[in-house]
Structure formats: structure tokens, C-alpha cells
Amino acid sequence: MSQVTTLMTTDIDNRFLNDVIAGLSQQQKNLPCKYFYDDNGAALFEQITELDEYYVTRTELSILTKHSQAIAKLLPDNLSIIEPGCGSGKKIAYLLAHLVNVKSFVPFEISNEMLNYSLAHLSPLFPELAISPLLGDFTHSQMVKQLSRETQLDSQTNLVYFPGSTIGNFSPLKAIEIMKNFHRLCGINGYVLIGIDLLKDRQVLLDAYDDKQGVTAAFNKNLLQRINAELNADFDLSQFNHQSRFNEKLSRIEMHLISNCDQTVTVNGESFSFSQGESIHTENSHKYALQAFTELSAQAGLRLEQTWQDEQGYFALCLLRPI
Ligand SMILES: C[S@@+](CC[C@H](N)C(=O)[O-])C[C@H]1O[C@@H](n2cnc3c(N)ncnc32)[C@H](O)[C@@H]1O
Image 1 (cartoon, protein in one colour):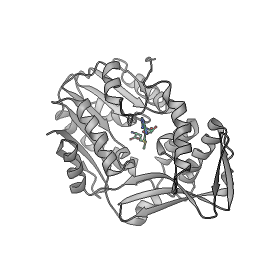
Image 2 (cartoon, protein in one colour):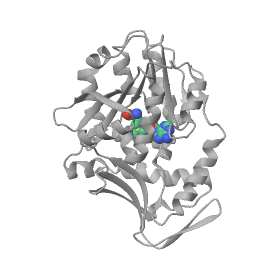
Image 3 (cartoon, rainbow, N blue to C red):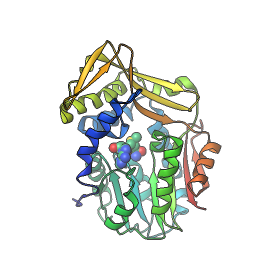
Image 4 (cartoon, rainbow, N blue to C red):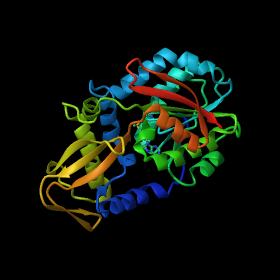
């Protein structure tokens, strides 16, 4: 099994507590979605990807099935690939099957569980592939510096692969900052391949984040369970309800947890009051028109070279290169 390197080691546990306290202290209470994926969260996310309502994974996989070979043809041999937020590692397998002499693959995760999933999936499929797993936070300000130090990435030609519409979890400003870092990571002759979720019928979007079986609700509430377990907190999960909303102005799905009653919750000795109906905002998922995403990428110094979409126009894979 490949040796996992941990970036920003001492940070992650303290940052979880600090981020939770900071988020619950805001006027609009919020919790960062990057903490969804503990053991249980990772398993629930895998269930979400199989739901009828959750078109996202199914659609992106259909694009990969149809176009991986064509995508691979546009990429050079001997690439090093880095996949921030690699999740289960299932999607990169489609590209790896068509790429020649991949030099190294760096799956990069904040979630130990997801990193283990990806290793368990990829190692048997590609026994010859040099895999260098990294545990860390791709939004960390020192990420590029630390990652370049820890890996054998080429200084000129790498592929940064970022599927799953994870870019949609960030505000446009933050997305530009992240893509600027990808630009630095991929090198002057490199490539960035990003999966974005396109704007579509509102009900389709709302249903995708609020399925009938309640798996997404369980996934959202699991964040409170994780805070209880890891940060000595006493959220009563039965007193919060999952809600998905479409924010038209900001073109994004929002997930919230709504307090059922007036209540007080304690996290690591600090008290937070909730009034009935008050929400904790837990996730954003921005939906893009292709033109808007092209303009956003340009602000990160990346030019859109080619896109691949499904027939319904639900999702796009975008190949970007440094301008
Ligand atoms: C929406 S899932 C997508 C997973 C996978 N890329 C896919 O397309 O199926 C987001 C993944 O990114 C990881 N993640 C979220 N924020 C992260 C961060 N700041 N640093 C590293 N990984 C992160 C999560 O743990 C999760 O596995």
C-alpha cells in the first residue's frame, strides 16, 4: 500500500474546532462542507452518488465513458496527475485507462476515509502506477508550496484533475483563487481538467440535493454527529431538519440545517443559541453557464481549450490551459 504523506499535519484537528466555532458565531451560522467526509459521511456520499435524483455523478461518468479516449489523446505521455478532493478515485480510472506512461498520480484528500477508498480502488486496477497519496487541505494558503515540496511534480507539465463539480462548493472569488493555484500546480505547459455542473431546471436541482429516501438529509445531519463525536458537542439531531434551496441571485444550491425549536447547543464548552426556524448553512453548490465559467477561468489565467457535455447539457468537463 502506498505511503500517505500528511500536509499541514498539526493543523487539521485544531482547524476543525476553530472553523466550527467561527462558523457558529456568525450572524448566519455556517459550517464548512469540507468536514462532511468522516467515515460515515464518506459512505453516505457514496450512496448519494447512486441515487436517481443525483444526476451529477451518473452524468459525469457518462461523459467520461464516451470521451475519455478523446480527452487522453489531447494530453501528452509521461504526465504527472494530481487530483485534489479525489474522493473514491473512480473517475480518474477512466482517464488512466487511456493515458500512456503516467509518471505519477497524487490523490489529495482532506478525508482519510476517502483517501483510503481511492487507494483501495486504484491500486489493484493500476498495479504499476506510482501513487503518492496526500492528506491535506487544498484550500490552505501554503498548499502549492507544501505540495511541490512533498511530491515529484514536474515544474512544467502536470494535469490537475478536479471532477465532481467540487469547484461549485466555492464562491466565484474563492474559485478563482483555487484555480490560480491549479494554474501554478499544472506548470506553464500543463493542463487543468474541471467538471462543472451546469444551470438547469430548478426542480431537478432541488431534488438532487433533497432525495426522497432522505440520504442527503442524513449526509447533512452527519456533520452535526461528527461535531458531537470529535468536538465534544451536544447537537440533538432530531431537532434539526435538512433543507435544500436554490439561491437565484447567486446561482447556487444551498444546503441548510433548520432548528426545529429554540435551543442551546454546546461545542467544546462554548454555547450557541438557536431560535426556532434558524438555519445553519452547510454547503453551496454553484451552477454555471459555460460562458460564465469561461470568464471565471480567464481570471485565474486559464483558457478554456475544449469541453465535453452530456446530451441533456447537464454537466461539462472543461479542459483548461495556462493563457
Ligand atoms: C463532492 S466530493 C467529490 C469527490 C470526487 N472528486 C468525485 O468527483 O466523485 C468532494 C471531495 O473533496 C474532498 N474535499 C473537500 N474539501 C477539501 C479540501 N479543502 N481539501 C482536500 N479535499 C477536500 C472531500 O473529502 C470529498 O471527497
